[in-house]
Length: 494
Ligand code: NAD
Image 1 (cartoon, rainbow, N blue to C red):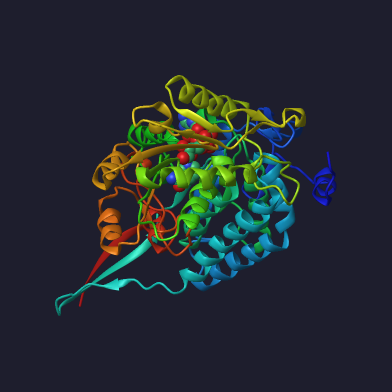
Image 2 (cartoon, rainbow, N blue to C red):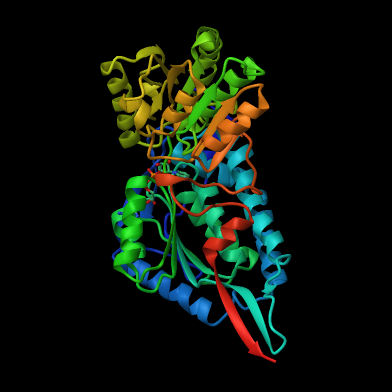
């Protein structure tokens, strides 16, 4: 193994797995802990507090007290802005440390942890901080003898439950708008990648977010997550994760206090390449880059590729030439572009789908096996199946790994019908030089984001979320404030 400066920094990194409640690092009341393993090489990184009902009660009580005494909600928006901008600055000051935590915890290449995840996460916090003192409320068209005000107020105590694939960024998508709007927050990171969220809470405190306003509870989904979902004093739960658990979250809200439940869930996104695609090289590069980025562990990964039959061979030749560039490597090496799968459970799932693709008759053209077994980590080759039929499991179910399913079509309407024949509706793309065709297709695709002649554009200024069972509500952009604010109408007699 080649040792890089990142290995040396990793060896001396301070790791603290204690929860963060009311501005302090604390163990679980029961002292229960679980082992946090590195995806890079399987070694134990830290013991992490295994939070459950007791810690959820304590964190929600701290968040409620902070909300009631207005120590944060009562600050002028310009004051909240200053603190959040300082928080974002601190994230940049600690950029290498945060990037290392992310890479060690969930296996993504350090070049992306540092260049993409920390960068986007701090930008998200900064953007919502910058936005909050520029938003105006409304005066309704009122009769002369009265005045009707329409104002936005924070919902109160927000719980956020997030996944492991972009731990820091998913946290930031909740923290930014929830805190900017004046709420108190209890964040439960995934048990598979809790470390960056815990460190963010310390940096937020240092930046001036008052104790109790931002709490982090590491723990398992059916313990800490469930306790948050069922809690009677949580006003809103913002969930990002699988569709299976998202459905449970909505049920828990209904079983308890009807807390607002927002869900950002799974996907099986379709990428449609027509024969008149204006730039085949760009289409190939986007299709391959987007499915293998983050080891295929992206909710919006274009995992179903529909290529018009007349260009399929040319497309596949170019695609197969690119695949080896994504061979998994040591995530702590700056040249690596594909890292480790998060854990053994996820790798078993991915390899299981690869086996099912073979059994159901798809043609395996690349990858298909585990890699870097001696590393102690869990790595899977970038995998490409051709000859996929819409009925196969690899075409229907979210794999959440580096597996691309290629289907072909001769009739665009039929391709769109198949693209929409899924319970999911997160993202989609169409490639064609005919703009009318592009617009018609974009309108017909049932997805929260549709790309035309590209796949990877993204920005904090645009909403992100799904149609159908990919969830409700939207993260990012000013629309995210809809999740974390209540609209109040005030009638005043004049
Ligand atoms: P998951 O649903 O297994 O877990 C997500 C979170 O929910 C974790 O914190 C987990 O501990 C918690 N949880 C699990 N069971 C729970 C329960 N019974 N009650 C309360 N909480 C519970 O998902 P995952 O494997 O962490 O993440 C992968 C999924 O997330 C994929 O489906 C992916 O598409 C989706 N995702 C969606 C978006 C989006 O914005 N739409 C973004 C990233 C990931």
